[in-house]
Length: 428
Image 1 (cartoon, rainbow, N blue to C red):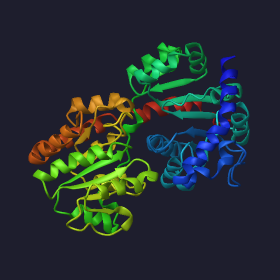
Image 2: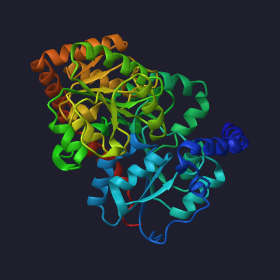
Image 3: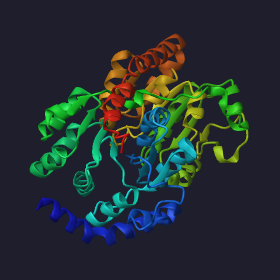
């Protein structure tokens, strides 16, 4: 009954959801494209072979897609007979799928969580296994897969205390959803315990660690674009502010202004999380009186430039490759922090604000290992940056400790493969 009520509410809300999609498309036109896929009205491409064994992996956006990459590459290598369909919810996620995998996988937007759309999608692709990345608990999707004998794995699963409290308000509904999932592969014991407390069968919950530790870090010299080669060769200290969110750039720029009083040659590379905000962040730098340039100009950074705006996608490792210190965004505003492991894996000291719930366990591990430090506000951010720049040995040690932690925690992929591979019915 609760799922029926949920479906009715979702159906009534669908016009509002579509209107919101169109509003978002004003700044990001890709949101109004391929709407048919979100309603499962579009058939698979002509290259899709319905007679082949098909695996479905759902990754919401960029972060989940990057986390899923080691698993996808391993599965395509170990099971060349497989067809893999990767779904995302956002255009940036879609772009990342194409950039990472090219034509090695099929991509579609995930259909809205209604009985008709999920059933149509399953009928179109006929997967034998669905892997949901992190915490994607869509009731109708899970119910439809369960009805059609499609196995379900919740991989790289995390559940913060905040999210667990939210799900507990609908305890019986949540329990019924969780019990239809074949395996929950949790990032940490705390996540596993919360899933069990919400009603998941303890025998079906495993602790495998975080796939985000299994990073594919490219050599720094790979990108030979004039912009990046020039950035790496600069005889200046560089602080990167990565994946910043709305309301956070103001704080970062205030901290940077304080740093300039002591380190006037310091360069800030500022990379907003969402491409639709590139223009507004550019205006903010202009209003604050900073001398700035943009990645999209694709030229070397002039000596008098103070801020470089990273208005590009898919080049995060290249930005990190030039940085001495990384502040990871989404943490000085209450959006739970972005991925701290990528800079750590590149031996770059990591600074984050107090909001870390998306990466709580990982941030704690990195901080205990000495590769990450937490600041409470922009004043502390400026103070810590100056401290690290003044003590290069401490800066290098912090980076090395973070890199060592990442290297020591790359067991999640083999643990997850041991769960997933027996569920793939190769004799189907």
